[in-house]
Length: 139
Image (cartoon, rainbow, N blue to C red; front, side, top):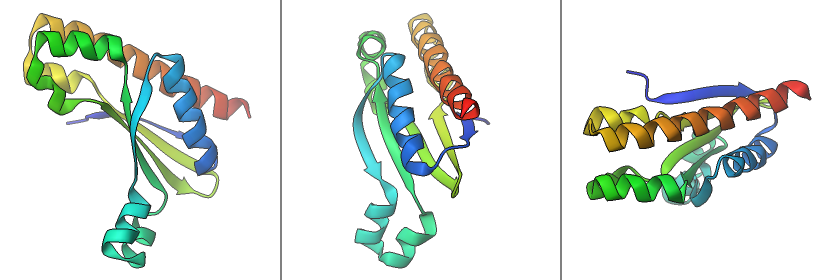
């Protein structure tokens, strides 16, 4: 089962994180949470664990309009929010960006309201990833 949309961009990690935030914002998503996995692993598990995972951040992206529609339809759906977007270093010149596929919500719910929200979120997240990929290709 595929549950993410993924692009690998020709950008250094820090620049990819910055551009990912910007492209998410263009699609109406704010970043509510940020987990620096490398720093967390280093603090909790030691330097070796942090180095093993490498540069890796999880951005908790939320589009308030879509989230309010989803929660109105199914309050328990809050357990799946915000939409996680992962930015991780592939190598020195490339970074992988992965966003949750909102259609997983439909698979869990199946209600018409959730399908509408998931379709809209899916369109927006795919557009953000496409913009990010196109911008990295343009140089």
